[in-house]
Length: 191
View 1 (cartoon, one colour):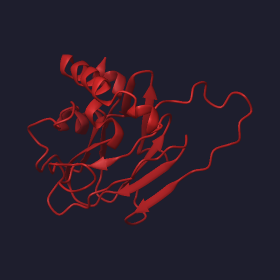
View 2: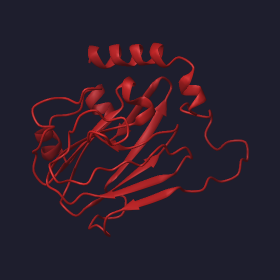
View 3: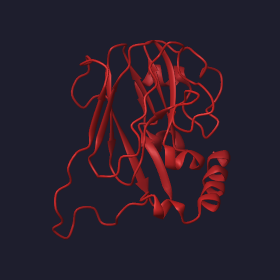
View 4: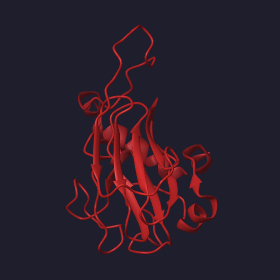
């Protein structure tokens, strides 16, 4: 995990005050203090999906100087919908497909729809994507890509350009581990 720490440190130094300008840090102590309830920003792509409610949710988290997806690895079947939800901070879920957001490489199966939530800011905001094409999908958070905020979803069976290597911006669990376990939490992977 030395590479992950090196990427975090380099990214923090490189981005300096930009993260605070982008609203990327957590606002502190959650909902304490009687603030107004947050509204949900929801963007949907694809069909209705076949997932059980809540079973395919990936949380997007800012925790101190750590930015991560949890679980960092998730297995779903073709036709399942995954919900990406802001737990804290401001994040995106963006597929590695050349030309999709700041992606310079493609790490999703050929013919698969690229997804990009854009940056979501409000706690509880969600973005959904239905995965139709079998294979391995690597994705990242736009503002925290250089800090190693990456994730992997395996749909059905591993395959495609993401197999056999790690994303350019961080490490993720091996696809077969994700298939075998169903999901790999960030703490289990990084701990």
